[in-house]
Length: 188
Image (cartoon, rainbow, N blue to C red; front, side):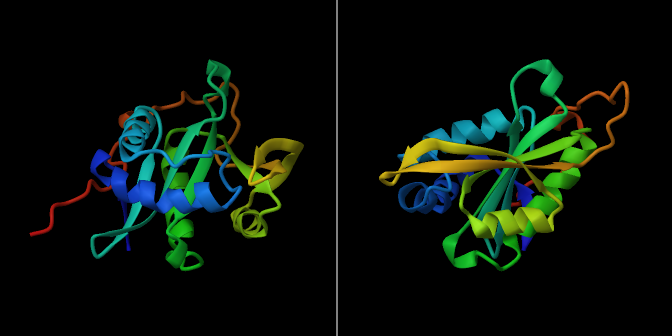
């Protein structure tokens, strides 16, 4: 398995990975799966500041992970929200862990101190995954979203990734870090 930067050309495959989560679960609070064009826009927008990664094996995309701003204001630059989605038939095969390993390495190089994960509750698999990675529950919100005919709760989990120095080292937008991750290569 290879972890690499996602590209706009990955959008159709990534949208197919994400669609079952949208249609069949409360893991995401979106109601309609985004189109490949919307996915392409999201990839490009994310890569302006944060990593957007794809896991690939034998030319087949298995999952993806990315970071986004925890909040938009400048004082939040050292906190990022993390997300990961894996093909349904590849879950519990180490894909999510491999993606998060690389994502966290890159966020560390960007000087991101706090990792935050927003998780629909209950979601024992996601909670256990994040706990194994050192995340702790930090907030619980009741009936935050309405999906699949029911009000859904959510929790926030957080992990300290980088030391909280005073003053902090400057946040580095993703394009500014050196040798971030392999680019996709064309097959011969």
